[in-house]
Every structure is written in structure tokens, then in C-alpha cells.
Image (cartoon, rainbow, N blue to C red; front, side, top):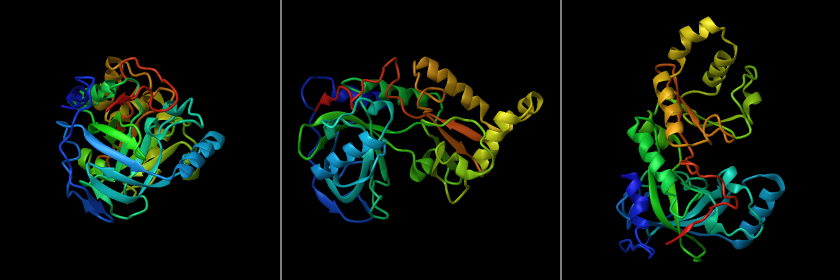
Length: 320
């Protein structure tokens, strides 16, 4: 159970030992030698990052100046398996409020992309991981939220408790989840669809039929071989411009309304203000090319159960 993974890690104040892992190096392709299953929730996993401090400092300076989240090249070790030339960048919006030049990398939210610079590089078939910002010492609120979403029949992300460190410094307890990409979409929703993410600065308005008008509003995260932005633009046109009669007659054909109703109810149950209608527009839209329907995909629950942004990145990261 997802909820158990952090509870296990935090059942006492002392660090939790994981089975010893035999180190191996992965240059390209998939590697599992010396590793356990990535989303095994019966243990606390280990992820460590090695990066050039001057590159990190320059990235923070650039982010503070422009808001750009530049990719860095790093060495990442996951449960004893070493991956070279991995892409990492800052991840988040409200979780990055208050970040300063003195920020320490082990406390920040990160996106890890194993195949950013090495084509085909993955760990147990996973290429992207999100190191979540902690809104508490345990991140138990997000772990429980993800479990409840799954139990409600909605799409969710696998999560693990991780001992996380950067450049051999202090290990902290972080929640790490699978980041929605082509692999996640295929497993969770189907490989023939398309996945779109709403940007925090955007909205759901219709901006015409030129895809370029949506560059700062939506990103297509998966399924580019199956569809482009056209289905999304047509959907935005419909929800903004259809008359009442047409909307009532056709909305169920264009949107999985049962899933959307469940989604809205779960946001209330989880006391999650940072949802599809919140300040971060936190959601994905999945387009099923077979049915022509969209489905709202839940995302980003570090502020569930009434948590509020702490600023400065990772919040109160628990010791591990």
C-alpha cells in the first residue's frame, strides 16, 4: 500500500536500513542488475545524485533571474545502479517559492530524466521520476492521497519513500513518484492516446486554432505519435463556445464525466486546493483516440489534507 511506504520509513526517529545493493553502472539502455523493483513499497529506497556544484549554483542564479528551469547533467544512483549523463532540473511552482541562492540541492524538488542525454536509458522501464517537495517531515499526506485516488478508480502515480542525497551530503527522506510520460501513460491509460499538461500560467480558454497560441498554456507530455494539439484545441473550443443545448447534449461524448465527477469529489475529500481549478492548474488531460473522450488525470498532491506551501523548495525534509 502506498500509505505504508512512508509510515514504514517514519515509524521511528532512526534511519531505516534497506538491503545492501550491489553497485553496477548503466551507460545505456535498461539496467536492473543490483537493484530491487523500483516501486517496491516494503523498503526505503536510495537515490543519490552527483553534480558539479558550480553548475548547480549557476542554475539557481538563472532560475532566480528568469524563472527558467535549466537541465543539468548528473550521475544518479538508484538502489545501487549507477546512471551516467542523467538530466535533472527543478520541478514545481509553489514549491519553489522562497528559493534563494543559499538553497541546498537535497531539499529541492527535482525532475530526474534518465534518457534526457542517453537515448533508451531507464530503470525498470521507468525514465522519469519526480522528487517531490515535502509539506511535512514525512510527505505522508501525498502518499495517502495517491493511494486514495487509486482506490477511487482514478489514475494515479506509484510512489516510494527514498533516502535522498546530493554529492554525498546529508540524507533526507523524500517521496519520489513516477512522472507521467509515455511509459506511465501506456501502463495507466493506454498507449494509443495523448497526454497534455496544463501550465501554471495558463488557463482553459480558447485561443483560436493556431497551436502556437497554446505554447505557454499546455505541453504535450506523451503520445506525440498518436495525436497533436488538435483534439485539445477542439475540446477547448467546445467547452468555451458551445451553446447550452449543445454542451448538455455532447459533453459526455467529449469528457469522461463520471471520472471527472469522482475527481472533483476527491479534491474535496483530500482538502486539495491546488487542483485543476487552483493556482497551479495542477492536472493532466488524457485524450483517448479511440473514444474521442478526454479524461482529467490527477497530479501534484503535496498540498493535500490542508497543507500549504512552505517555500524554499523541499519544506521540512525528514532525516533518513
